[in-house]
Image (cartoon, rainbow, N blue to C red; front, side, top):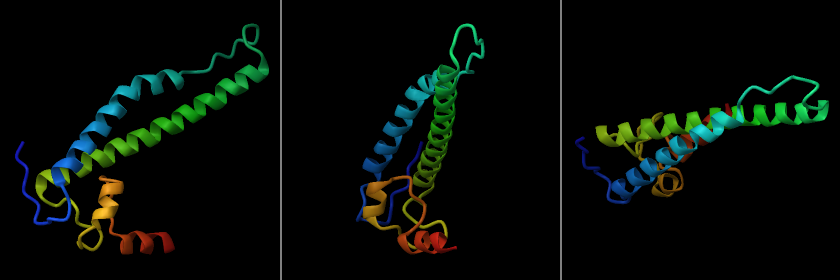
Length: 123
């Protein structure tokens, strides 16, 4: 895999790439645990009381929501890694201006500069 060198000297692309790769590995490692937590709730009333089933169903719903968030984060990470490889990393996807180093250090998978992110929130 060939990495293009960033024209920016205010960010450490390789350090950010490593953070993205580490987080992707964490998400992959936790995937089985999330799948187990999201298993179908048993509806056998003779084995489980009504409140226990409700608790289990709520836990299942929370596990499904957590899995959806994890999948979304994983997709964002993979997209950021592709932008690093293509040399487009660190540029806002809306306006093309550089994303602030602080924003990238906070979330290496971020896609928008502060101005564009604020603009989207106002819509």
